[in-house]
Image 1 (tube, rainbow, N blue to C red):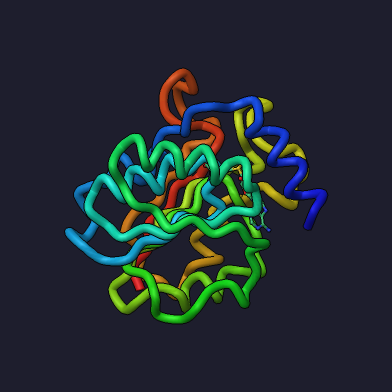
Image 2: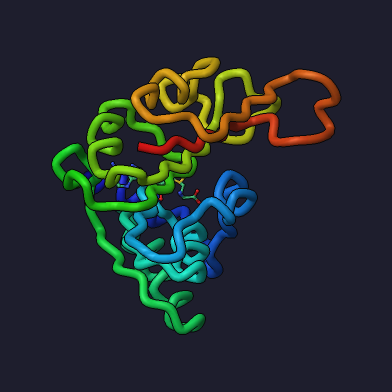
Length: 189
Ligand SMILES: C[S@@+](CC[C@H](N)C(=O)[O-])C[C@H]1O[C@@H](n2cnc3c(N)ncnc32)[C@H](O)[C@@H]1O
């Protein structure tokens, strides 16, 4: 756990501003409920958490990196928002059933968490998921295939959810356009 934290703290020590929201979330803002509880899981600098809080949701943001969470807390203060940050090693036991109206996961993949993630959604709750695929266009993202999605894998991992949106362009057509490195999924419980 300490090694993982050190690795990400080192990454975020070079950052001073939060990232922006994931494409799958920003492009589908109109699907969000007007109120409710949201979780940005493995939030990093918390671009998604800030986006959700700006949309009026009550937001939890979890990550193992204290450095990332500190930058997020400062950004929340600067924007007059409240985000409940939690430094933790995310595991199945971290998630409590039927808690969230919205869960967002971007660029984090732990297949052992999928059932707990779905259980943590309230009935009708939405999962927004965006992460790298094995069939990506370039070197962006992890190289270890364990952290990369197989073709259509999010559809399989979250098949108990009702499919709302799925996108995986890979190398189809004119690769100058569109997100070629990641799959995007929205499902509803
Ligand atoms: C590639 S970053 C993505 C951050 C953010 N979701 C984004 O899209 O900008 C992956 C994040 O997952 C966190 N992380 C990885 N494994 C974790 C674990 N087991 N528990 C908690 N956080 C973890 C890292 O600290 C890092 O912030």
